[in-house]
Image (cartoon, rainbow, N blue to C red; front, side, top):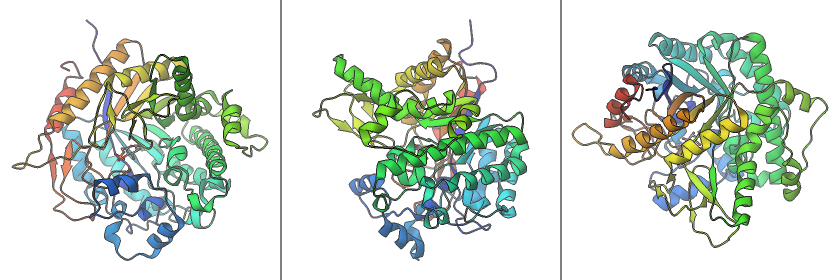
Length: 485
Ligand code: BG6
């Protein structure tokens, strides 16, 4: 009998700096784009959801720059990982975690983003964190940019639509390779590089009301990010010849709503424009053949300088990575029922259940996407994010999150099926392994972790960490390498 998972399979957990760290004004850190996102704890569910879809406005941005009512900015508080990382990593290692994914906050290393010398205190923080992870036997998987661009790079340069961002980013990446390179096992230059399309503020630091041609700015920014990605890989391989680099998207699996050929064609277009376009450029090293039609349909014409295409061609990724939370359906019908989801809202699939936030739960979709991605690129895959946001309740000091266990169990089973199908899956880093601030709705009550954190959006609470039932369940999965699923 063959094992369900390879012997060296990396069971992991993931967080991001801005959602976990807190310590927003400590260690010489500068303000970043996430620090400015506003939240009101008194909002009801509908207001929270609506806020999720609001792209940053100039008014909110300027207000946040000088606002003294800091309790409205949950990303400044996170779950306090900045102060608790040693204890949190210990808990994760006791669960048996084999790989820990987090992101580095650019504004801790270069507070404004355009300096030439890095902030030693910021580097020391990550050095200590990664040394601790290594000491506890975990591999380190680092995202270089997870939505938190230094604010100064917007006020002074206008964000990623400005080509100068590429140099600032590569200087930042080099500082990481030179100072932390020997502690990092996997590098991810950008979190969900396709986010620029759905949430341009998070993804590309673009503020909608400042753009005359919004779509144009988004795709110009994306071109700069593709170049930054390629040049970061180039510099990385020069400084650290054995380093491994991935390209990541938020994967929106989209099935045809019916067998009507129009829906099938729509599904191909949706897959190309929202998913494959981004990995096609990073993995194949060139803009795909459907780019012209995609750009023409939106009236987009981006500036590509001499030499850019050669840079993309010469510096491609070593592995594919994506977040997988849900699937949707594609249709040309305007009548189809809608549902919400990660970054985007889309068409509802009548065969699937949804989470409380309307995200459609589809474990088989994970197997489908793994097969599709592997077949298309023939590169190893790391599932960088997957999990379920839920409103956990503490009862007598315990959290009985059987819904999370069931979600994870079904997705692990399908991951095993994909491996049996022949897909090379290197690692799985479960999202929000310890409760953090939600990226979309900016609330603590949407919890993903196997470790509960007693803290709210305003940074209030005892800060106690409580392993949930899913913690002990995941511990057993890791111990048995998934054989008992
Ligand atoms: C991914 C992001 O898109 O989804 C994470 O990379 C985010 O930062 C995760 O937290 C889950 O989304 P949310 O909105 O539920 O936090």
